[in-house]
Image (tube, rainbow, N blue to C red; front, side, top):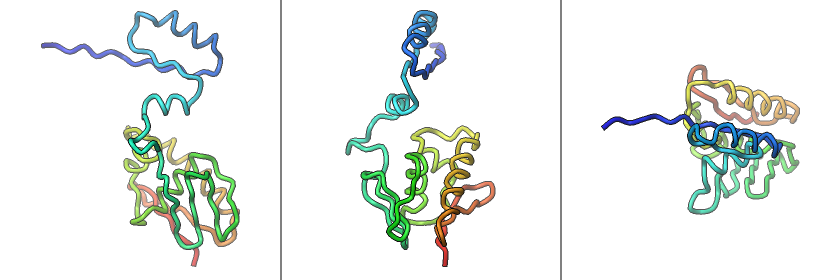
Length: 157
């Protein structure tokens, strides 16, 4: 028995006309996912868990850091931090017990809901943005790189 691999084409556009043209041109090509934005794509590719969440629903606390994914709130010493959804999820993972090194593979699976394909650029970029925001916080938490492995969260002493 031979198997035929079918390519999967993904179109992400908030323009309905673009999505229609893609459907018309690629109708007979194979599976095509059409969505308006990345959050819709993420929902299509990585459906909700049985408990109805994609991210941890319980608040995570580490020292004076608190991450509440359900309320979309991160606080340091009681003061809210302005972080994006991705930055909140990344910080929640790094602060989750047992606190230690999170490998690239584990972060990809947990934050992006997908498999690690060897390209760390998207992860490094997200960590860079998170670090920039955490540096603005006095004595705030820091994200440390473990070269070739992943990242770890450290609190100021």
